[in-house]
Length: 455
Image (cartoon, rainbow, N blue to C red; front, side, top):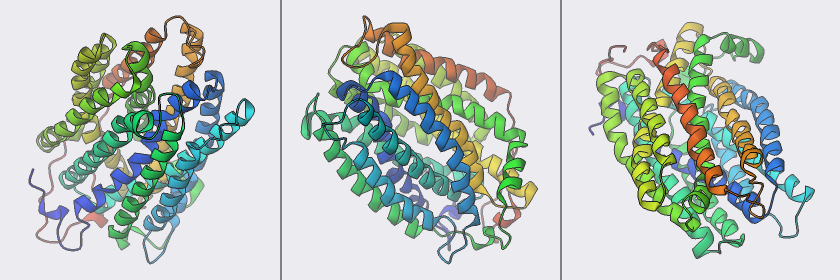
């Protein structure tokens, strides 16, 4: 696909240099989310009730510290920019905490194991939030026009999918076959060290390459409480945030439960998650080009609505899968819907940020994205409650106490709950309208691409 000239014009950050940052930010957190249940609950024997309680507590803490991190980013004034210093600090801290998360001492059990899990889960999520609030805030700033933004977003989602192939699809192979076994933990520690080093190198490269816009960092620094009050009074914050949460929570359930879905629902060794996840990710990557073209022709909002509906239908088909072949067939549809959401969801959020900047005269993308992070923090609460519900409904409490029908339990966890959430999201998306309002600071010099018509 041909990139608009403004994406790579003079004085601009080349789209691929910004986009590759998503590769670095995705590897650590997706290994954590994709393997934490297998590592702590199924192998180390952490009770699902303790897991659920920790997830609720850490989500509350994360919801409180996110706005503060975003606000501090918006108020930062250095010769290196507002966002880059936070990226350069957060990258090594996230890598170190991820390695510690997957290095729980073998002697830990009971309260000690719960404490280790809680401390490093909270720290990993905090540093991930620091990175993503600042990285995400760069998208509308570096690429103010929606068509340029769609290209940069498509590229970064493509890098995210490459990271997912590695951190999700390849991880079971590395942890259970190459570096360890099905029931050992050594493979997780070694894999975490490798992923941490790669993520650190990529994020630092991206941060040093980004060219922030000085005009976005005004002399007047936004104040915390008035800014928060202004955001929570914005109807788009609630409508877009809650609707996007339906998608985010659904995918969090899928990422956290796919390995146990393969083990219990399909009755296969965990390593087979490689094939199912690989197909989903490859289809998603291939679909990004097509969905980005649809965005260019029909607009982000129309495309977002269609993608939501496709994703909802895909979870119903995955529920009916009985073996690897039918699971892969359903996975193709999941990949198509997911690809559409990857191509559009952040564009809808970026529109909301533009509207806020235009109407309030302040660029507080860090705080706004962190406030949106409140909804993504619901992921931890809902996934914790969803996992706890498997004990109440199906008797699955841990790998040593899986209950009478763990296969049905993880069909509901991986397919049933996500279907309900995305169906609600698809309906809500039909009722939402988000206008295009470009902030005056984003005005392009003569010779830039023509602005597209609002849709």
